[in-house]
Length: 115
Length: 115
Image (cartoon, rainbow over all chains, first blue to last red):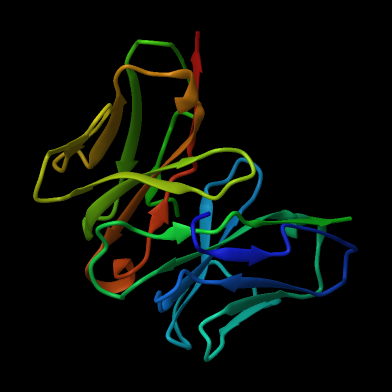
């Protein structure tokens, strides 16, 4: 157990629907990152939050949004889902914004299947 | 634009031999490099890292080499074991601009170690 909890582990939904993925970071970690891993693709950075504030945006579609709540858990909202959104979505956390000696701690991911 | 590149999607090595996984990067602002290992149905886990002020870092069977002039790093696993079979991701980060506080990942290399 990495300490980063993602729910649900699996999600199957129809095109056009909206889903919410949830992430609880490791205790004490203020930064949360969301990544998408599609077939044959690496880990594509979506968005980062630090202590409730958005810090960086990557290749996140306008149909996707995220937030980090006061208790530091984060949610990734995916709407108007398309078949191409089927992927593994990973959440990761780390303790501070500066030094990067040990990188992130990842959750086990949510596998989203859009049918 | 893939700033971290792993050009070999797969590598097959016999148990006991050396595994060499390669990674190239393009962004000169990167100054910290990490390797992650990923098993199926799990999130990536941190393996080893190296700062740009070093050219080698060793941890047990794992050694990472950095050639800054060539913008190239490699992960050596000696001796390779069947349990090392996993996807290995190369990642990079920096302390300036868009590289600050964010990891850029390669697409991964599937390592298979056979008996």
